[in-house]
Length: 180
Image (tube, rainbow, N blue to C red; front, side):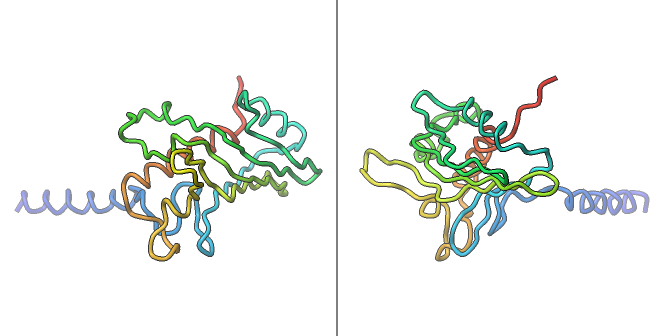
């Protein structure tokens, strides 16, 4: 009887703990990426003070030698800009080259918009695509990671990992670094 009670206790504790383990796959959301009307958006709400001038300066400090980050519009309410041939940092993720999808090695392109809110700002990255110079074509993120007619993310482990790596890169670019 004691063993049965212990078994039931362990089983119920295991089920209770399983509720808190996050599932890495969601059909319409992975990290900060969401699907709306067949398009993929990186949307992040940040509850920190926002000054467009300071933020534009911070973005340009993270620029590459080819000036891949361009801030096109700096208005009182926010910023708009583009990434052009921006190299992604996949090496810092800890994955070996053979575990990385080939598109992550290609230059990254996108448009971004940062909108000031009452308590922070909303960041939105759209029109995400990669230059495939070998095939002489552009690959959109939707072509790479969507399935079922473009309404859900693919369940492929490689593609989920790729979105996580892209999510980490965008967080690194857009999130202000805390200095102490």
